[in-house]
Image 1 (cartoon, rainbow, N blue to C red):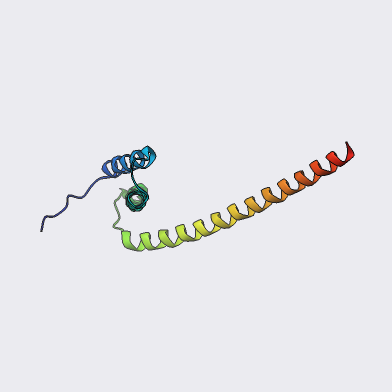
Image 2 (cartoon, rainbow, N blue to C red):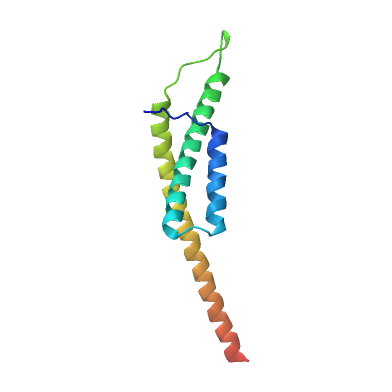
Length: 123
C-alpha cells in the first residue's frame, strides 16, 4: 500500500481553487459536481484544522514566563474538540440570526407592498 504524502495548506487551497474552476465551468454533470463540492468542503475543513493548529502554536509561543519566552506543550485534540463544539454553536447562532434578519426583511417588504397598494388606491 502506497502512503500518501501529507499535503500542506497551500496545496489544499490550490486543489480547492481547481475544484471551484471546474464547478464554475459548468462542463460537468450534476453527480460529478456534487462529488467535487463534497471534496472541496472536506478540504476546507482540513484547512480550518491547519489554521487552528497554527493558532494554538502561536498562542503557546507567545506565553511569556519569568524565565523568558518558553514553549509549552499542548494537546491539539482537546482544543480541536472544544473548537469544533464552539464552531457548531457559533454556526447555530449565526443561522438563527440569519433567519431573524430574513424575517425582518420579509416583514419590511410586506409593509412596503401594503404602503404601495394604499398609495395606488389614493391615486
